[in-house]
Amino acid sequence: MKVPALVVATLLSTTAFSPAAAEPGNPEVDAGTHSFLAQFEAATPDISSSPVAPTSGSGTSSPLVYSYEPLCQRNDGVVQPTAYGCGDAFTCGADGLLHEVLAHEAQGIRHVGTTCIEPGDPIAAATAPVLTPGRILEAFRRIPLPDAPLQIQPPGGETLVNFDTILHTQAEPFQETVQLLGRQITFDITPATFTWTLGNGQTMTTTDPGQPWTPGTPMDTYVSHRYTQAGPVTLQLTTTWTARWRLGTGPWRDVNGTVTMTSPAQDLQVRTAQPQLVSYD
Image (cartoon, rainbow, N blue to C red):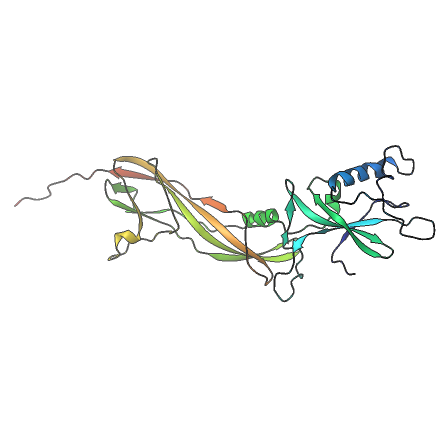
């Protein structure tokens, strides 16, 4: 039976593992081994409590070796579904990964049960790293995002009361390929929402980045705001980015989280228009 990419941990070197062998005070188990076995038993509630028989018929017990295989969705429908390892690992506990426990015996490999391995567990260091949703999100957050500056019209830092002040930015989808745990991952990154902080206690969230003013374009196609009171305001824009990811040429999966970027604040003076006589005939 072929088992892919197993990380093997030898629990005992001279005797097979059984609950009786791990009892406190057993002279056949040294203190270090007993401590490890106690932690192993505490972390593996699904493992059978029946004694494991010696794997050799010679009268001398052979080493009993366990390995831990992360449980994943491996058949993703591409040409080589397992070429890039564990893509969608099954999570458990607070921040753990669910593993199958396998016993390696002289007659072959036997399924023992499942166990939840948390990051701080003793056997966590001996398990192969897998692409968890947390690791994917962390890699997404490390990707430099393009600037999405806030643009305001009319320009010059001034606008009028009850006048359509136009807001817009420049943000386009893009792709980035990175290496994570020795695997090639491509992110498809999209600006999803834009939150405009208007400086008067109001915010406005859109999926539209807006556009600059052009002659003949109807006003309802712009992202705009009308201030009803004169005075200074400070505006800011927060862009929320979402992403999909895939291993090699595999299927796209959504990243479990978002990244936000806030543009530098801009001051705007809202003024009241005053009629002024410029000539008289």
